[in-house]
Image (cartoon, rainbow, N blue to C red; front, side, top):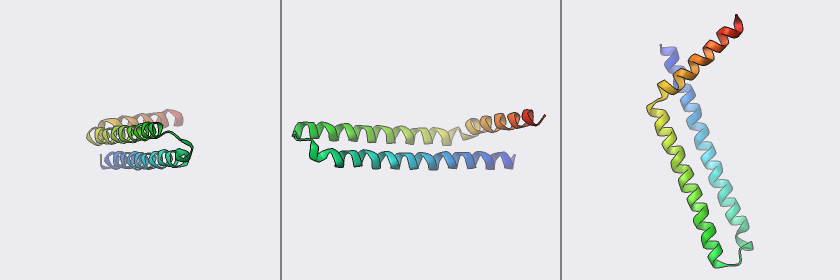
Length: 96
């Protein structure tokens, strides 16, 4: 059982790390697009709408990923345990 718990924790930590990396990349890309397109947006109203839109994308996506990670932390034994059991069963069937 300790081995299963270690595998579950490893999968969870991997997913958590990847989620943080993807959120960081999202922020980098959105901020890069805003900065690079800023000189080409002549109207102040359009600039404000662009900033609000970018902020909404960043805030809501970040919040969604954080909520997902919280859910994964609460149910990781169910979520990852099922995955590991299916992977093990698949390996056993392929070896037979």
